[in-house]
Length: 279
Length: 361
Image 1 (cartoon, one colour):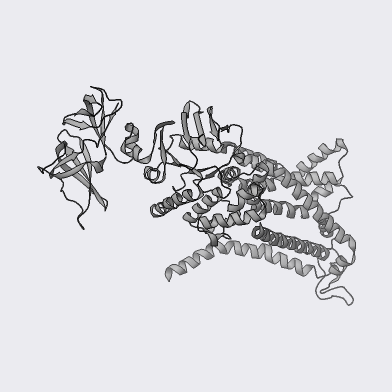
Image 2: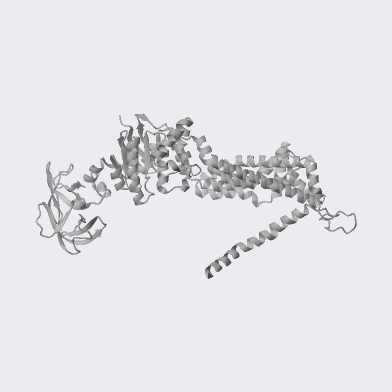
């Protein structure tokens, strides 16, 4: 009895602080945002009061923000474009990161840590400085302020997030499995697609999520490298809060983005399960 | 023509010759074992047969054709790995069907062969399970079925029973023998466990330091070891330092240091005055109470120093007059009795004229 109570207390001591932290700094703000998306903007930013101070003033709860979102194609188009950019960035990252991660995983142990360090070394310098560096690099080639520039920047910034989970996964692979596959008649191509790649699926999923989701919310890169023509959801949300100071509209956009991401994650998980069962 | 012809194969790692000028031939349908301590080169030789490693010198021929330019995936040689190396993301059925798919067999053929292979290893009902759901013995069977399903010319087995517990290992040995007889595929088995090698093989190559010490049938290897290494490595053996007094085609007269004259069977390289050891198996040494009437020629007095009871037999450690220690094995024929002689008791040990083997240095 005493031991189980002690165990209960230990469990609470371990899980309690992070639980409280998440409630305070994740759940409560998320709920505030949900409520905010149903309210009117204040006159000078912020939110309008719930009860009208003067008659005729906009106050209380409304569906206006959502009505606006669903009544204009432009939002749908920007969402679609953002998801497209995120998908292409993820794919390009995957294609570049996979051979790199495999190379690190197959290198002698003493070289691996150094190679991983080199991959994350760019984080040591400021994000904006690195993006400006791309401006300097792309400028002379007349590639600045183009979709290519945005994509290059996105891929560059997010590549380590793809390399690391892939490397962690590939490093654990038993090289004996590849020997076995070869012994049983599989050529190099078959060994990759039938053994290495399916076994790396968790790494591919983790890396893709770590790239896809931040890219969706990214506004600095499109703004700096994409010029005025390239608006993505991130820019729209940032502009809603900081530009036109329409907090409820920004909250609604953030919420819609979250819903879309969760939906995609749900579909991906479902597909992955089915894939495992049917492979 | 032999199925597998290994000709003067050498493989060096730096200055060390892991496999040193090894030649041997393996016939179709044979259960052949490479036996030796770890680091003797048996696994290196196996990897060269599979194609994962290439000889620095010499050649490996299958059906008279040099395999040097054939990569592992093109060789009709499959391996059962020590760790089984089952694909964790595939079911048992997918694992077993893998070689058939790689060979591009039509689905109908894959279906029937898969069924047959699973039945052969008694895993008909496990096809939909994943490797992590299986026991060690079941994994072993899947690995066997997978390596055999596409009927390779040669099946290589790399210490496949090493990870199993003793009881299961014995069961799997019997199954292996049956399976090999059933499918008729040539098995090349690598192990460091001498009992396993003796139980399973048609022929055994005993390897040490990259060379073959002796290549023969199990009973010949056990009964007539060619040198000290083989005698020592295979089973238990008493070694008595001895010198030849007289050598003839009918037999040897030996002088065992401090003990006296002993008769032994003729040995090839034994000349008069050559020194060596007389090797005798513990089960060939008879132990009896002192001063018992005895018809055996080689007989000496001693004292029981210690004994080891293992159930079916008891091994007595007997100290002889010259200080040499001899192990003698006695079956425990009386129920409930662990020993027939007490420690310190004077006894007599004796062995037949044809029992020992003289191994010149």
